[in-house]
Length: 353
Image 1 (cartoon, helix red, strand yellow):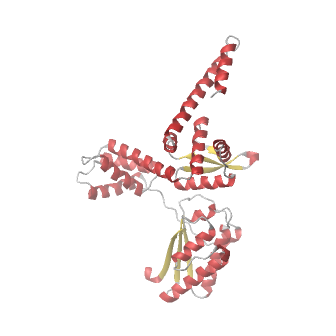
Image 2 (cartoon, rainbow, N blue to C red):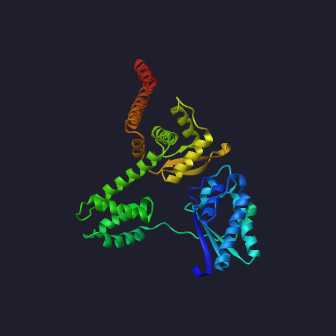
Image 3 (tube, rainbow, N blue to C red):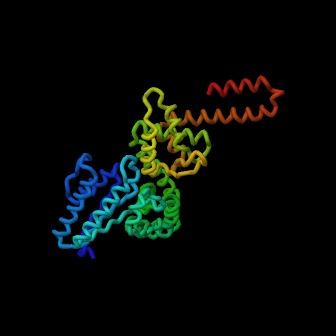
């Protein structure tokens, strides 16, 4: 089948703008990147010429353009993803008139996203969606069993592999990370037959390593945003916090320097969602419209310690003191007439925290 068509696979994960996506496509087709001043129209026209030249050279009629991580272009707040897709569809029609066929395939992990496309684009897209389920526990187990036979002299017991598969399937369903877990568990076993404890130890190590990698590579302001999220979740005892709450807390933390704009903080939150540290969801606030809530995908204490151990421990201790004072206040309010001076004492203690 490959002899019937040419193709280009483009992972646009690192494209921060719609125009950047067009340049990544051009680079994959073997063309020099354009300057943003050239405009998106010229970029699409150049893509068309490159595809036409490839098909003419290879004497084929069909070209498949695959855009992996397709949802990334919709994070570009200044660009127009709808216009980009519209121009690509127009390019497909122009090539068809010349007897050349272009198929555009997009891949995204965000299967339930309702992409903000204009009606003119939706009406011209003859799209067909194919959904791939995450690996189930049995799928992961089958993969791990096959790899374990080739990797270990002492074959792990089925219960141990099952435990490894269950941890992976429940947390992410990613086969590559499941194999990493198996490898790390093998290293923890120190040449002996692998046990459940080795799997648990490996799982903890990988979580910390991944978290340290994310936080360690974060910019100064991004670390403060992560810290703001942690404090909000610690104080509210909730599993989510809103964009406005995060921004307010961030501004309180950045007192000796100029805080970033609200819009820039939103961009940083999107980047953190892309790393897998956070998940987000849009929620209705009634008359106030819609807002975004963010949730940590890793344990709160691990994230706080990854930012700065001494800072996080002080935050936890301060919160424990506040909780203790709150509990005392509630007890004293019910008996205010009997303990007026004690109540004032604890109220002053609360103000000094």
